[in-house]
Length: 208
Image (cartoon, rainbow, N blue to C red):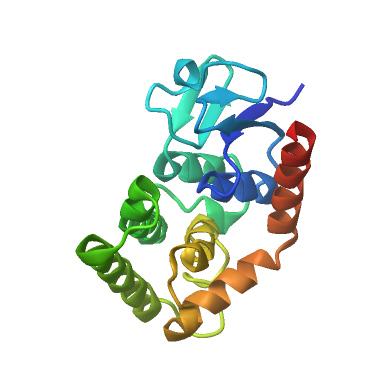
């Protein structure tokens, strides 16, 4: 019997990137929603018993739990036989994928003030927006025209697309970042992304 993994996720969160990649890698898995306000899973468990840091995603693997997209995304890639997802350890290609995933973490951190304080205003809001725009400019300069970030689709594209999708919610106009917006649309058009969004929406509707 194939090993089944369980992904703990939250609607609209960065865990969507891991969800997309589990589908892309054709890994057998189940999902369970986490309410980050009540800190409970859909089955009623205290989420801090699963991940003591309380964040999503978390990937349950038999009797272990792996956390952080920076660790989960490469791990999922190594479960796949798709070369772009699992470059050889120690190769420059592997380092480039890790580098891009790591930079996604920098973009993620730039959103932190918005998610910590809600609708930030005044000087704090200006600083937060300036920091986010700086990271988006850096991403825009890094991205190629008309293709995925590193050529073939990788985990970095899934992670970046989720982060880019948050821009309207914090008031960031994407007109200055056309390559980033195109990347998000390219990822959103993939069957894996459509399936992941549909699965999460179905659980959301079921929960009411």
